[in-house]
Image (tube, rainbow, N blue to C red):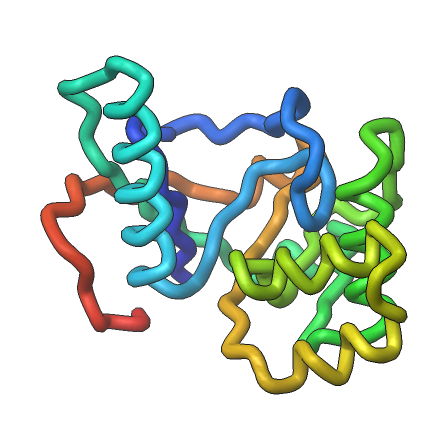
Length: 173
């Protein structure tokens, strides 16, 4: 299976990112199986870097291969195929408590994009009930993410290549 990571640098050796609170599935290295999603993320990172003075920043997507079947034999996976109460509970815990940890090596599931993130923030602020949030999220188009949350999980990611993003592709491979 191919996975993609959008950034402003080539990431040949992924690492767990531990300095950012607010990640959906906690500290980890985040990828997606949707090429266009990684390209959008790389372009977003480039815009942010440019605003912060890195005028020569480039939008870069790193491409990886992973043998999911082999990884599942060894690693502890948590898969969320849809936005569910368990999915929301994990996101709320990870986004609200920087000391929260979970026992999973890899978490796969839906990404809380801007509109989904808004719904999650309503729940965190006590403005919306969790049950209402799940109902609202059923109507959102939510992208995929694969969070590699342990060092041993990163050993299954094999760097293949990288490329500079010049525009958005509609290719979902």
